[in-house]
Length: 126
Image (cartoon, rainbow, N blue to C red; front, side, top):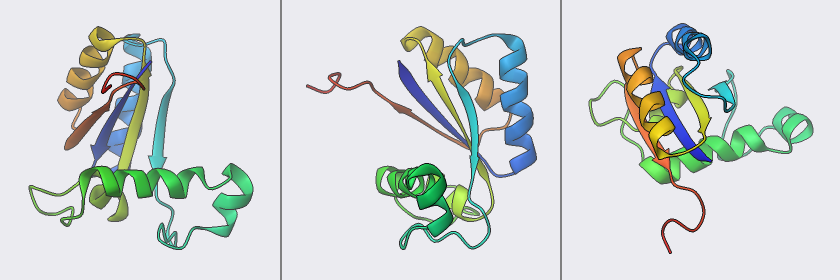
């Protein structure tokens, strides 16, 4: 599996892109839209997140921040974490292989993604 992460400045655009991706059938993998809820603080963790997901949402935002740094979502060099932090959303797709990941990335970019990342599977960087 390959993980494709695409950030959208507008949450509704992300939701629509995810729905259209499912309809288009470009992947059989999981398609998920993630947002940062008002008041969540990734540096401290969130008690509700800890109880419900074991901290997965907090950890995800932390991962994005450390992978892509901070710059402010209104700037062209803004990171994916900045987009999420400032009210955007992230579409996360589990693609079967590199070819499928490339199709998904192209589709989401055409659907309005402002930033994208591709996380290689474990062992690809050995």
